[in-house]
Structures are given as C-alpha cells and as structure tokens.
Image (cartoon, rainbow, N blue to C red; front, side, top):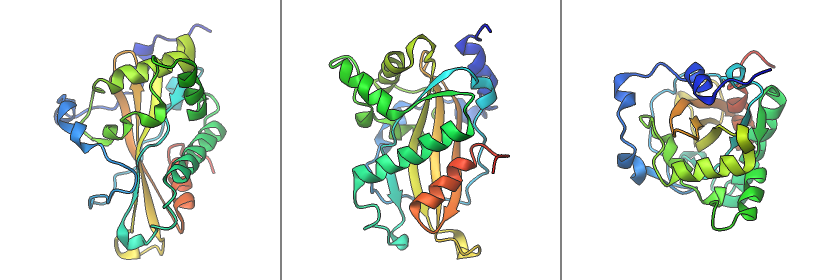
Length: 233
C-alpha cells in the first residue's frame, strides 16, 4: 500500500489552531526550559486529553523522545519517591513506551533506547536525546520548534527512523499536582505535556496534556497515558 506523504499526514492530525496559537514565539519561550525537580507553577483545571491521531499515523515510524522534565508539587511530599532523577525519567519512559506499543500497535514506535543507540553510532552528528531541550515544547503557544532542537530532532529521526521517520512524539514535561479539593480521594494528578512534530518542517501538528490520577506516580502516569488512547480498557 502506498504511504501518504508526511505533509498530508500532518494536515490530517493538526488541531484547529486559534490565532494566538499560531504566533511564532519560539524564541520567547526558550527561557522556559527547566530541569527535573523544579517546582511547577499553579494551573487551572486541566482540559480534556486529546487522543493520539493513531489512525493517521498507521504504518508510519514515529520516534519517541525520552522525557527530560519531571516535577511534583511540594504538598505531595514525593521528594524521596522522585529523588533518583535518572531512575524516575527512565521509569516514566518505560510506562509511556510499553503502553504505546500495547494500545496503538498500528504505529511503529521507535523507543528512546533506539534513539540513544543511534546517537552513539554517530558521534559528532547526533545529539544525545537525553540532553536535548525538549522540555521547551511544553509551551502551549509554540507552533514551530526552534533551532537547535529542530535540527537535532530531524537528525535523530533520520538516524533511528530511517527514510520513513517523519514524525517525533515528544513528551515535553510530566508534572504531578494535588487534585483540587481531593473530592475523588486521589493522591495526585499526573499531567503529561506531549506533542507530535513533523521533523522535516519543524511544525507541531498535535499537542495535548494527558491527565490521570493515582495514589503513586506510576499509577497516575499510567492512567494519563491510557487517556491518550480512549475506548480501550
């Protein structure tokens, strides 16, 4: 079956964007890049999670970048639970990767470990995916990925995804917050900011904040990721 061009796929998954979203303020948001453990800013009630556009991506290779930013509100007292930064990031990547493969097998997901191996095979050409500034993509008004991140994503997608590696799924940030009023009895809400980028053009074609609640970081994250593929138990 003949595959569709990347541009056609991107158009089919792009959200209807509001005018203010289309303002290219990439340079203005570079200062938003954070590190794991930074205190998250307060937020309003999160919007509904938009499902992954898996039907439009069926049969395509999509590279999945590793997470670089995890933060939790102080009121959760999860400092000890999340103290091991590298271990926390790796476990979050594992939760996301395993659920993507299990719940959306129609897409060929290229996991972070494959990207790391590809980067090691091309020293001086590819950037270590764990050292990329992907956290800046959590900015809600970013429509185009700025350089050098844009070039880095295009390079790693070409090395790990081959000639069909047109798209990158980027988990930009994972934030844990205490639910308002604790009405449902959950300990925390996981908010996973995630985007889909056309690596050839740098355009962000889809974004959402996946949310889910749980008594520990991993059950909350699992529910958030499952919300990206609704209709499956």
